[in-house]
Amino acid sequence: MTAQVPSPAVLDDVDIAAMHHWLADRSEDLVDDLVAYTERETPSDDPALLAAGLAHVEDWLGDRLGRPRSRAHHESADHGDVLVLEYDGTGNAPGREVLTFLAHYDTVWGAGTLADWPVRIDGDRFTGPGVFDMKAGLVQAVWAVRALRAAGLPHPAVRLLLSGDEEIGSPFSRPLIEKASADAAAVLVFEASADGALKTARKGVGLFNVHVRGVESHAGLEPAAGASAIDEIARVVRTLHAATDLDEGTTVNVGVLRGGTRSNVMAGAAEAEVDVRVASTAAEVRIDELLGSLRPHDPRAAITVQGGWNRPAMERSPAIAAMYALVRRAGERLGVELAETSVGGASDGNFAAAMGRPVLDGLGAVGEGAHARHEYVSIAGMVERAAVAAGVITAFA
Image 1: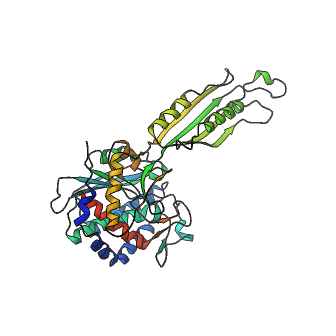
Image 2: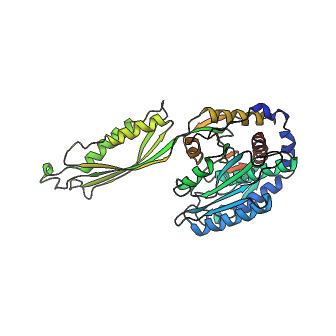
Image 3: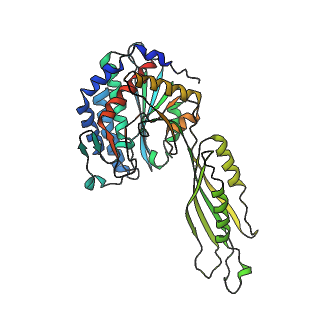
């Protein structure tokens, strides 16, 4: 399916500033929503807390957006469930287009984190576990739709996908994300911004394990009888690290190394855990070829590679560039200059971009500290980005 991204000129007659004022008058409601959401801990590895958090979100969505046209709850045995809700468009938009919103409700923060890091508000600064990545983004998305309805502006049908395993690589939600994105006019990802900038390119992520089987022998008595897996894995590490190409945007890092049993034994086994980041499909192919070409120095040893690409690269395609032009114009209508950037981390937007969909990522919170104890969001930034998102949404109507 080919989607046509609207021209930024369609926003010239949209009063985004008025929606900004409407949202600013209700900033306390946005804050209250975020407090209630943040105080439901949703660690990726706790199915019970994830279920309770998702139930809270669904109840809250019912209060804020009303009953969805359709609901699909996909249960996962090992990870957080996925909930897909579809809401009708308004004005002259019903049935013409659908926008897919992606938001994950899981966080990296374990159960009990709130006990020593409770929600705190200090002026414009709102801090708490998961607020930046990415609970504030969902609050902004919902209030963007509310602002459009209050202004009497049309919006397309909205498909909201809530996933509970993004922070661990989206093993369960990926096919559901791809299905929800396949027919969308555009995919809006309410992940946090990068120093306020939208994310128009993200690296792909590969996670691999390299296993080496050697031949054990006494290191002092019969060194020639053995084939050291440690020696082999050391050569592999040097080969892999040499594949890093910063100009290309490729990094290869062996972050964990294991092997051997005792210092006087030629190691019979060794293992390396490898993290790969690439900025393009071409780089992904190059790394695949390198991993496939690994051969032992000693023919008595054996090398096997396991793993694969967790997320494909999100390249700055013409469709993504058009989405950035649209959001930049929405910002200009507020007197805000919105920058774009490329980041090393991946998101669920990578999946949609790999399918050729127009993707706008980083539409969520303004703040900093993802996965860190200083994680915070700007309340004024929440209001601003909700208004900007409203402009982008109505452009598709």
